[in-house]
Image (cartoon, rainbow, N blue to C red; front, side):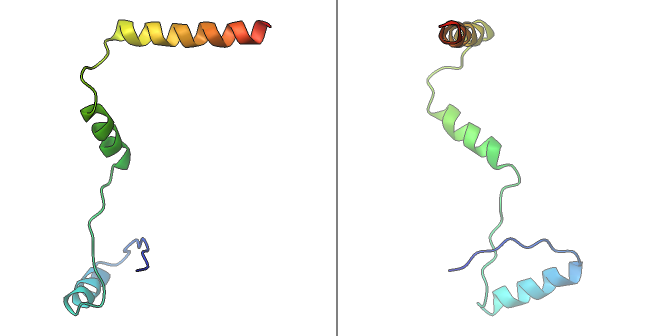
Length: 73
């Protein structure tokens, strides 16, 4: 099956596409407008807890310290 994204410029085209779908010539699938949010939701659902601001800052500082230590060598 081939897929393509189509931007509809004229509302009359929507009617034509629906007619083609009714004839089983095409399939219309709704797409999410915010794929990034759905990915975040999926990742967060696997986490047992949400880090607080102090934990995030500590992690950032550890990464920065490692990076700066490597660049000084």
